[in-house]
Image (spheres, rainbow, N blue to C red):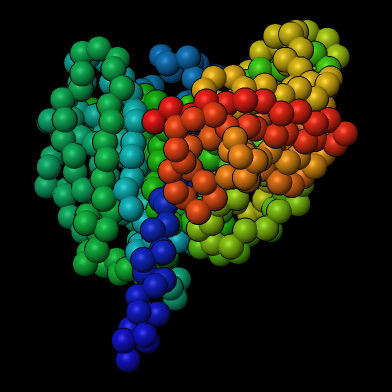
Length: 426
Ligand SMILES: [Ca+2]
Ligand SMILES: [Ca+2]
């Protein structure tokens, strides 16, 4: 019974799966197909299309890195405006792999808001929506709604969580972190409800225009992935030496729960030119790591090189862990010679013995007392080329302390034979 209980516990102990960002291109740095933008509202009372949505805003959004934006600042013309009207700008991403509410951890938002005019600082409305597929053609939007202090807080309910705040006077970025399970479970959402999509929205509405431009950056939905591999760390060094092979090496991980079949690619670039490419097929069980070593690269000219190592898998739920890069500094200095050109043997200090081998060979290193009795056999076997150093601890082969006095160290390597005197002092 005890054994069975232990076995049942084991997967829980090992399952310390890391949470990853389940949104693709969360920093909106690329123009790609993962985010879609829509403008205008298709439901009554009246829709206008003065809104602008950008999944990849070419304006630099204050940070130097591209962001998405939703903009409803422009008010429609005043002619024949009805009492109520809406306009909205939406940037939306459908999830590639179905995720349930219990897979999700936290939602992290970074945004910067500019009200339509300073006078309208109190009446902005924008938000982030999570859409859950409840089955049988039912969906539910769970909306985090950011309201100016003058907007009706009574909108808070089972579909909407109102987060009131004062618009900042400057253009600083705001950061919010929410726990969707805490906010939405029990409000029509179950742990098994499937997340369908996420959207960032700016609303313009009413006879006085609630308009604002909102920039979004690094929107992250942390949770457990089924299919996600990535590069954790580049292990190979950052220096290149002339005519010395460099072996790109990295620690990779399967962050997902499922088995992963993928490839790992290493590239080295000299400015715009690719000077090295290697690709290896790999497979990893869920939540395991491995170390990958690629074919070696020998630079033939000094240059500022960049090494990039990346994983390639389809599908892969998180793209921000796929790739790491580092600069390789070309020192132009050959590595010190590690292969000596002759066999040498010396007693460095009272108990330090050093010998060098230009090639692998059989080595015998034995210590005898003055009567010629074998006291200790330090080395007896095949030894790799290089410089080798060892200390005699002053004990014999059965770990007894030897008496102070004079001993002889006899060294044999290939055809080389030498004997040197050593003094042991206690
Ligand atoms: Ca960005
Ligand atoms: Ca990945």
